[in-house]
Length: 211
Image 1 (cartoon, rainbow, N blue to C red):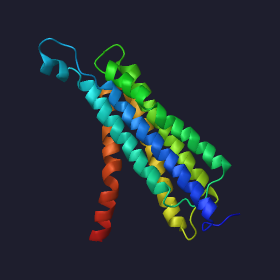
Image 2 (cartoon, helix red, strand yellow):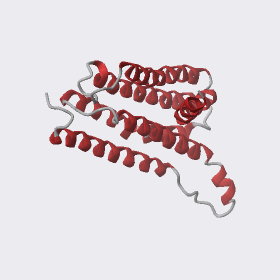
Image 3 (spheres, rainbow, N blue to C red):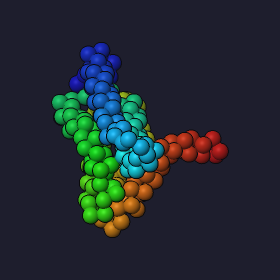
């Protein structure tokens, strides 16, 4: 088995990170395609305001993908080796990243449609549940036997990260169920979930300083 100091092996990890970052960048760029200028002869401001679902879905999806990119970046701080199966898992994960503009477009188009709002919201929540599961699959495979992780990483740190990643799918599952009951509440909850993930590292850092 190659060690973490092997230049070729380290380069393999760097290539994987570079490719993943490129897919993330393309995906978030495509999200903006649902923001279109309205074709009106008068009442431009009103027409722009009527497109609020597109603005909401764009901002929400951009932030979610951005937060997942941050989590992915943090994960790769501890991964020093890759193998064939891990690469395939990462391909599945990037396939998910690339499809995010699709449910974003559905949410933008149907959030104001009472008859289709539930379907669009359920698909949106379901897609992010799948993303959360794939993130956990990446971490589970990388940490299960410890062969892909940097040397010296404590079991406590691995356990903490496993719990952190595992919380995501649980919250998205709750959001998926809630979306069947109330699409508006489902969208609100997915906003809160990602606000939590965005600020939790800052709160954890503040807590450690206080204690």
